[in-house]
Image 1 (cartoon, one colour):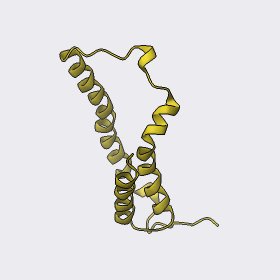
Image 2 (cartoon, one colour; image 1 turned 90 degrees about the vertical axis):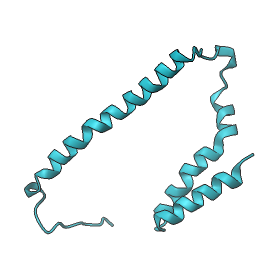
Image 3 (cartoon, one colour; image 1 turned 90 degrees about the horizontal axis):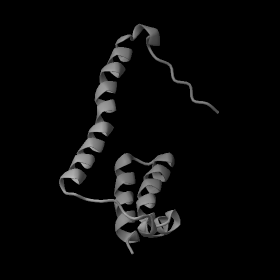
Image 4 (cartoon, rainbow, N blue to C red; image 1 turned 180 degrees about the vertical axis):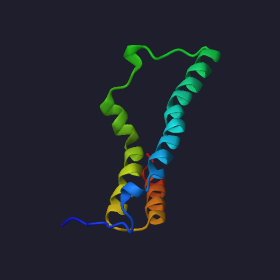
Length: 102
């Protein structure tokens, strides 16, 4: 059963929503390249090098060691989908990470 949402005014009248989205898109598009640049130049400054291919862990071993990080994403999604409040989901996610540490 689909939930129908009705607005008190037609959506096409609210033209400022499109301009607001366009204004917010520019900083959002700059965020990830700036993070990439920060990491890249810090690595260059500190003369860091990448790992050699034999040293790179496999995906499954990394997931086996790092599953609490995935649990901290899955628990809030599950709790929110059950209809609980966001603060409850956040607290349960924190408890999950603390209790699931190896």
